[in-house]
Length: 282
Image (cartoon, rainbow, N blue to C red):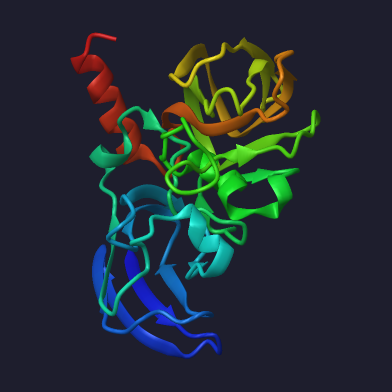
């Protein structure tokens, strides 16, 4: 896989770029300006490790389209990132094609620290039918960014998906390809007593099945095993709020655990997965 990293300005002019086979690095020796974008180009769909800022954890993601563009956040959008992110006059970026043995293991398939509203190329991707006041600190992307601190709210690292008190709120996580999932983990925002919580949440899978999960007043991980199934997306909905004095339930993080769903183009991944299961006596 050929990989290219670019920094472009508001007019689309390329300020810096680097290209490599299966791995590339880019050092950008300027201060970001409003309108700048970080661009990732791949010669084919596939899994890549992306490290686009030293203040944000690298992520293993799936790039489906030929290129991905992240607008460097300014203003309100910066509040959902570390105060150190995208700052300074030197930035190190890297992209690396993942090997089959790196893709095959069971992992949280919902993790993507590089997701945002405009993203249509890099998966997983989170979207919602409502976000509190349209503020970045309550955006859908926050539920899959890997940040789990949840005893406060409204600023990094206490970002969350806020539902603006809407009982019809729904969050969808798209994987961009078929995956095999077997567990869902919820981290409710737990800034009690400011926050409320949900006593039940339902999840509908792209295969048409719906499951409901009982939740409790806690900031700890609430995990539920599910019958393994192959899906391309899941939707969290049917959120039943507890009858308490707060109108503010919110979701800090959702994890969806599983493996890649082997297909005709994933024979290497499938072979590694089968070998791993055999070694563990499954």
